[in-house]
Length: 362
Length: 188
Image (cartoon, rainbow over all chains, first blue to last red; front, side, top):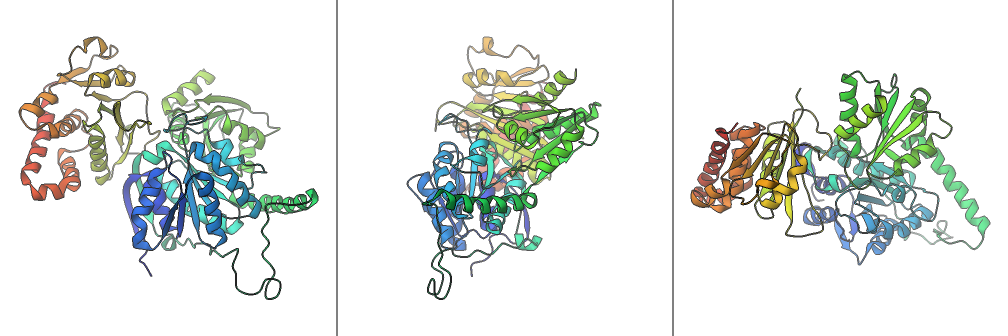
């Protein structure tokens, strides 16, 4: 038995891509499938550099379609498998991910957003929110965690495997190029030592016994002859998702109770918003902070509670309203005014958020 | 509680600005401070101006990049043009005095503009390879973000194995750092 990749706890100063690779190791991921694309390449680099010592595996495929399908295959064989991609790779991967939704295959995919549309920049954006939450020709039967710090990247990469295997929905860790490339401190730990038990995996195919005799046949479908058949299956899936959603939903908030205006953001942008809200509070502005951690499912109940008291929302994102669209759906019927600070494809600083709030509040 | 010190370092690829930022960030982290370092990166593998964004403070750092730096250091003519945008009224702007015909490109919205002869000192007194370490010394002196000793320790961790083989390298690096500090000592 190879030794555990992380023993005890250790504070390190590394890039986000290193964090993801180590988190996957700590989460007992057995194999990564991938195809290179900036800014996620170093996840593959660190993974492949580290795994010989720990008996894990890697397969580089010919493109992201293949990377997605092989990840599905790995999971069908009962492996805790994951992949990572970005931008145009995320587009290609939606087909295998739809298959994972169709067959309830718990694959984990790390997405590091870069600028779009198309090749655009390799640097950064929050423009893959729509694609990651609702991509595919289906109903978005998936879970998306949006990370803000390196600690989030570590924590939620581990958690993604457990969410996926517990509920059997494909699960995403949504980060971005800034997080991929920047260095900051993070505490690595062995999940077991923090009381985190990894959900056991099991093979979907190749189980022992004669199908139909010793055990029910495993019949995994992503195609149906009759529309009613599909409808019936989807009703079951949608009910499962609705039941799981309240258990999966996560958010972070402060100073919302007496706030006139609540700043809503996700991912790395929420770091700027957090600082801005703290600074504005010190200056006497009645502002609050809300950050959905799960973008799918949206923390609807918590959002509606905030919407009941706040008069205004300021939605801040490095995209032209991809988060705002999800929020509008979640808060439909609410009366709070929704104001925006959209900067598609570029970072947002706390100075800009402060200035925008002051512009609104006078 | 003070706000994080925001530093922009820019130069040509190969001048070593990313290493400077990384070593400073690691030195601060080693001392239990908060640090965040992010390089700019694009589709190009080489060529183009290399920019490093570094923040060091005592509270968790916010956005990885920022609009205005407390200190902006430009080490080539293109780096000067590229980093003007990060200069505000309170920014200390440092550039290398060896850059020619740059007067018109210098930022006009701050009075704290200093030219230091780092390239010259590296060539004539030390070795071109420690040019970036001279810059590191200058940054440390100008900002006080880390103690000189801590930066030396960080370099030791990074280059210790090379120093073991050739102790003169250690001497030269540490001397470069001291010289860098001297270059800015008389300015502010």
